[in-house]
Amino acid sequence: MDHSFWITFAASLTAGVVTTAGIVVIRRFAAWAHRNTTYFACFAAGVLIAVSFVHIAPKSFAMAPQAPMWLFAGYLAMHVLNRFLTAYVCDKPQTADYALGLVPLLGIGFHSFLDGIVYSISFSVSMLTGGLVALGMVLHEFPEGIVTYTLLVRSGFSPRRSFLLAFLAAAVTTPVGTLASYPFIARIDQETLGVLLAFSAGALIYVGATHLLPRAEQEPRRFSLVALAAGVAVAFGIVLSKG
Image (tube, rainbow, N blue to C red; front, side):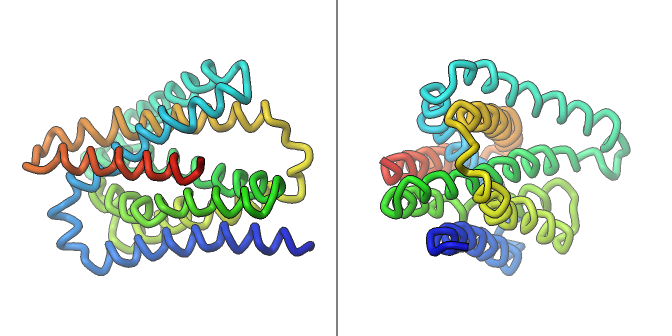
């Protein structure tokens, strides 16, 4: 492996470590997390919806003419998956809430895997480009770990299983995405990446707008709108840091 591979892999591994740190912190202070899950849900919704609409979707539209169709496909796929999980997998009273954690888990996992692919592509352009992209993406890794773990616990998973699932979906997938894509980076054309980004944006919009916000509205808190606005602000910070 050449020098650029190790730099790229180190960047993606750093993202995974930061996400894991978020999971560890939120598990250590579980009682506090339970009291504030509504705020985390609003914050996460703000980040995911804003980043998807303001950055991921426009970028994918510029890269692939079919991107709008795949944006809708990503949203629809998450809806169908949610209905399937609710009707057939989590149809018993003791597992009825599991879909509320599994659907965001899959959406976040897919997006984190794509983050790893983006690391490969950006560092193949130049070290400076890769560094700037890495800086922007790492900004959302810590809250992403917190939110993923909290959603799983809220949905009825045990703390231990929530930790494992959140670690695998939100942290491990980024370096795995880099490892899987780096050897083939020269073969991934812009249009294909645009399609994947659009599908990811649709999935994340579903997670934020259809899962997180309605659940937060069921348990209104005094500063919910502040948390939502903070999430949007972080999202714009991510976008601006990526240039």
